[in-house]
Image (cartoon, rainbow, N blue to C red):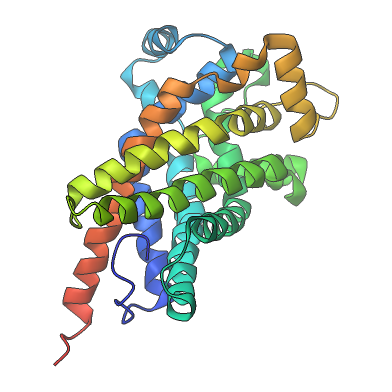
Length: 296
């Protein structure tokens, strides 16, 4: 499993999914402001300091949680699917193959991320638009009151397919994110344990999350920048594909623009992973204590 021993086989796969969604929502609530800063930086092309100042000047502290409803709905779809599937597949793989190697962990993480991102693309689209609305002229703003209103509006005006705008770059990003994050997290924990200096606990989870967060951010941010631009596309012409957007950004703004927003991205990813995984661990243990009788 991602956090606990693979011997905890008394937990049904459904519980992995439920706990994954709840844990993702908890982690996202803590780090949502960094998502706001990241998206606004990628669109407005300003620094982190200027972005925070703009948020405070325009709306106040409340602006840090713009799109929170969409963010929660996204976690209840995306994280439920990705964490539930990763832990279930990880457990099954260990039963048949024993201790897994790093490429296998990454592969399981990538597959789980692709499935989870496909399920969560509509809510991710609404989230990006709610955060980016402030940068549009008043007449072009969508003004979604909440995530559900946004989903309904997109379905009516752009069709059901419109809810999956940016699905390909979102899934490509998710494959990289989850392969790097979940696979590296699992591997980092094993490596740290193998040193003999760490045992299962908050410190081990924190260190593994920081390592996996750095690897994940470095490899996935260019895809995230391109995804954000595609989802927030307001031109009358059709937006370019993921590769075209990456090339366009690199050619017109410089290669470093593909890593714009790295600091808020990392500042969100590391604590988000830590909070999410600790919550997953504790909720899992709570389930075992409440619903699974101790073995004789």
